[in-house]
Image 1: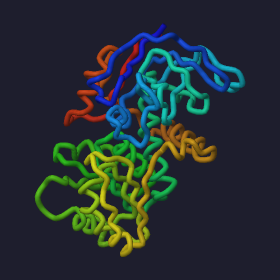
Image 2 (image 1 turned 90 degrees about the vertical axis):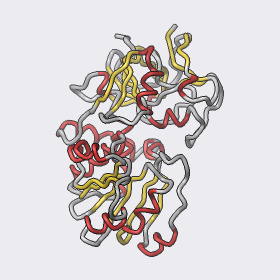
Image 3 (image 1 turned 180 degrees about the vertical axis):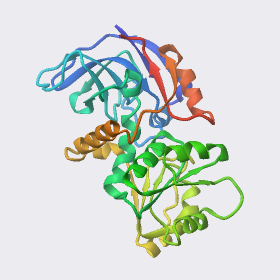
Image 4 (image 1 turned 120 degrees about the vertical axis):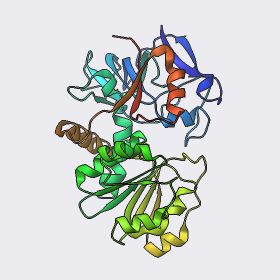
Length: 335
């Protein structure tokens, strides 16, 4: 038997309960992990309220897409995965195989070895944020010197990851935040410029044009949607791309067709899941993140660590306006 966090309807994290489940054996192509630590993600929070791009197939539903643990069993046909070694789960739609648990059976394709030198907590914290940011910033926007990339809600883990990644590629990175006190954090993360959206003064588009010498931004990595998009689209450079991957405003944006026509820009509804399901893109992203970790271009940033039985309290903390930033991680206590 093992413990796992589950919900019984779409009531959000306040409806979570910690329950006992039989420990399963892995089937063909599957691996079982003894979970040491798992991370909180906004996708899980939205999924618990049925506001995600997927829905659960049945209840009770287990939560969580990001974890690190020790392999203790492999199913038939699994090759190259070592029993007793630490592995991490990759972002995927887990349905009723959530990782917020002491034990997890997962398809072997959604595992990767934990990076050398990282603890279980650090290993559980990196793949969702860095892979989410890697594909749009590096592969699609082609971050490099001379390119300017806007990151909205840049204090989010994926947002700060985008700043780190863009800086390592030499691009000019511009982050937005609602609070002036977040500026030092974003500048340390890799922002060349920070726009405080709730402050008075010039509009967002005008600030962006000024910061880019009139050229405008080459890409936007946008987790906000709603009203912010219409504030920055007036500063799109020619052939710019908008990567829309979240709805912190809790509403879909109105696609700014006029601005897209004027700048020959593209609007892309982006999900990292599509790239990790691809046999070419997935290993390329994993290799890049491992290499960047080894170079020191990116590094785990843990805000708080909670014990297994305080998962709901950790979710409450994640929802609060914070002056400290980084991943929130749960340790199961399993060794």
